[in-house]
Length: 381
Image 1 (cartoon, rainbow, N blue to C red):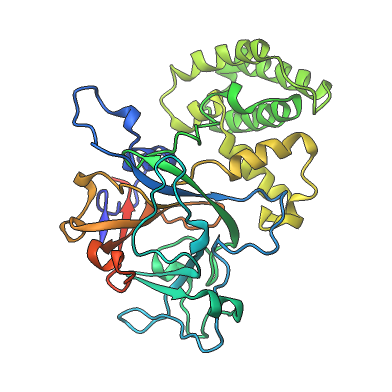
Image 2 (cartoon, rainbow, N blue to C red):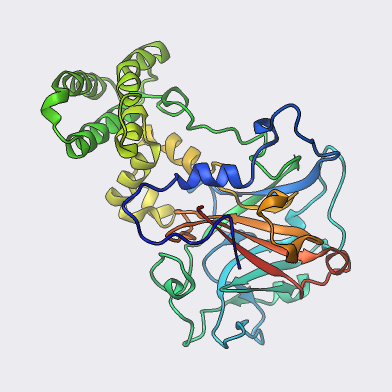
């Protein structure tokens, strides 16, 4: 089933930004009006933070994408149509500890072993005990496994991109961004921290604006100022920290121009587009699929890479789930077991997909029974 609007038909009209839509879907408590009804308690949740490519990946026991690690007798789950479901991730139960403020931990969750997610039109969950896990190994999808595109994803192949995750506990009042994971890309001053980043961003902005503006000649003065800023950035040592006041002054005319523009692509280029910096790095460094691909990324850009990878992506275990108005009646008496955002790093992206959520009947979950799990697909309105 789908949530958060019907799937859009193709259209020339610009769609809402997926990151913005994700924040709206699991709206933070801070965005509520003061007179709105507030939750009476906060639920323990665990954000699944993507691990830095510059830290150790060997020995990871919680991850998204890649292959499941299971006993040799394991049977790959299949959907109602008989097709193998896609492996989404494997979470070590021991990583779901006690929330430090309240000491809370969800009932029915084993203290060891692992939980595996397999998705398609539906979801199936599998539990591997600690003993089984110690005797397990990675397995490849069955030969008749469909392409992920057959399940609505834009990813090529039969597996999502492997990435270790580290669960971090927090109190979740309304299903939104954890307080310990603020938006580190809200303003240019938040993420353009050295001259190397400033040079890359300015070069991308010049290329994009020259391409996107209907008549670049009409904006010769603005492009000239941007080119001068790019040359200044190139002339400085890449690792040298940038003066915040100087950066703010350089972006002020760009932001003023953006306010007069109608085209979303132009506005984002003018106000700073960290996603374009990430995509440029992907193109230059072999897709950034695994740690070896990151080895050649210049030192000045590695802080950006780590921040981009480890930002809030909507991946979490437990918490309050999406707001009630976005939830189908089928999950009204269920617990949100997990949520996963549409993520270009692990490649869980679709044309209009914002995210997925997995729900379990409360009483069954409290008894350690995951068989009644339901999968919701959340799409742009």
